[in-house]
Length: 201
Image 1 (tube, rainbow, N blue to C red):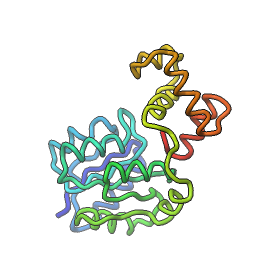
Image 2: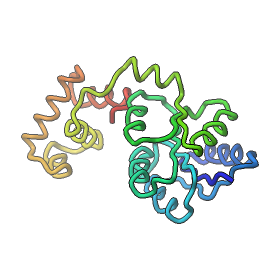
Image 3: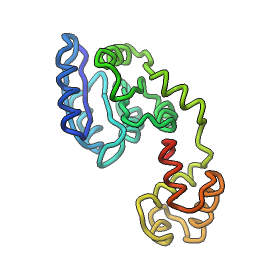
């Protein structure tokens, strides 16, 4: 029996996923949650074989939770679900060494197949997402530029961003300017939009 943890914040989608997994004789959902910051504690309690995680979750996102699980619960395999299919998300997922990455709108039989393959230690990657990621490429931003731009996306002044990321306001401005140049962005809003659409934030 494959023990599955499911994390999805949209109740209707989570209900549909629970029903689909429940139809499989070799699978059992041992936890279903709607927040990213509940994933690791729930996994410690239930010890799932596979964690099926949405990317966009309140608390922390699914990819951040996946990276933490890799460190704390390496025996649990990860299958990431995405609604948008942003190429940068696939890159981050591979960096977190997840076992699978697929769209939420994939055929229902594909979900069960993906869970089984990931449970066996195999990879399951949506071929269209892989092709799109190869076409767009990796993020041109450094880790620090990404961190500053992510903080900027949450709002706040340069001073407030500096406090959040432990940098001086002048250094924050330098990182933002560098990010704008690399992304070909006109301003902060444009840079955030470009990076989000590519899945780099």
